[in-house]
Amino acid sequence: MKSVLENLAGVDPVHARLFAMRGLTTAEELDYSLARLAPVSALENIDEAARLVIAKRDDRITVVGDFDVDGATSTALVLRCLREFGFKDVEYLVPNRFEYGYGLTPEIVEVAARRSPQLLITVDNGVSSIAGVARANELGIPVLVTDHHLPGNELPAAAVIVNPNLVGSQFPSRNLAGVGVAFYLMARVGRMLEDAGQRGAAKVPARYLDLVALGTVADVVPLDHNNRVLVQQGLMRMRGGQAVPGIEALLKQSGRSLSRCVSADLGFAVGPRINAAGRLEDISIGIECLLTDSADTANEYARILNQINGERRDIEATMREQAFRYVDTLGEQRWPSCVCVYDSSWHQGVVGLIAARVKERCHRPVIAFAREDEHRLKGSGRSIAGVHIRDLLEAISTVKPDLIEKFGGHAMAAGLTIAESALDEFKRVAAQQMLRLYPGADFSGAIVTDGALPQSALNLGFARSLRDAGPWGSAFPEPMWSGDFDVVEQRTVGENHLKLRVRSADGGSIVDAIAFNQAGPVYRGMVQLAYTLDVNEFRGVENPQLVVEQITPLRGSSA
Image (tube, rainbow, N blue to C red):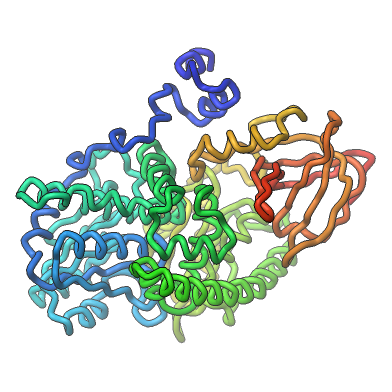
């Protein structure tokens, strides 16, 4: 640690220790200028892909996206860039998740073919679309796949595949989100057009780094240095008033400040509103919000998305209560190593959120299922640190080849389809393979913190310095602190949130705190808090605020 801290000389000592604990070794890793991006030319197949796109600039191009924020931002980015490059006939198509399912399926190819495109570009999907690409080839439509999901044993017969996770890839950042891959493609297209004499083309993609930041944060990909560059550059555009109108409208709709926007605002405010459209209705509403250049139109789309998100919260609350009741009835001692929950009434667009909530309660991988059709279940899984859930599904599929009809995903999230009749066997095999692959998995739910903060650090200046030291996110977590506090006041606010006023055991001033979704217990006396230190703005006034992750009553106190 000492040599690392010496390499971080010149950095605030508290920040230097935080960065060292997150794996940084040199001050250069805190340089988030665009010049520090991994070279565009280092991404395999990027030149071939860019040449294919440019060759079709006078033809109809259809972008086939995905129904989440990463897919929506990828779609909007490619359309905005191509149109600004001067491509005359560019459109998009996103499968309705309830009608066509995920990715470039043969059915969605048939829909696209009615418009006679001369090129299909997939964004945030396609690497597992074997049958869909085959159907496009039969119809004489070339397919360019851009994706970041882990490939299976077989690749689609696409004209070109751009994916940093292809076997043998030497690209230095395999953690790119789908929108990151799309950005790299557009950057290469812009550079080639500039080299061919189209002045200004190379600068176009960087104007949409706000879209890249949003998709990267919302998809919860690890924020390695390359992704932190992309996110920080996007946040800087937002703070400078250069965001697309849709992002500005969604921040405004959620009560967040554009000029002080941080990655958490994207992940917890903007992202869920766009995702809600894909979960319940049609992600096209979100895409159109990101595509429009009209502030009035963007505000109207943001209002609709906010309304849909409210409906999503209501549906999720009912499903969450049912899921919690099920696992609580089982009892903690009987929780399997991989928890599977299902109810025939559940909404398949919300099961991923239920898996995440149950994971937080049970501290182990969770797969939530909903009915896809009369015979099949659609599952969505969320994992814990140290357990790669897609690898778990692959292991299940290897020992029981007919058990899973299809699956895909990342280390922390995955989706799958099984027959409803296979659910009981799936539960059994999932638990077996979980124990085989991860015998030492940590199911304790223990929160790892960065230690205690002295009372003197619980101030606005230090809170601001932590906020500005980001971007924080997956694999580069916002600092989490622990400490003992006396509860001075508490009340329930909003739907289920606990508002506290606390004083450090060291004494000093009273500080505000908020514990989201933790209303219920009444705390008296001293408690131990695990928390992040945030800046809360109310009516134009900023104050430090503890955002509480966990509350533990101390001996002699009560809850």
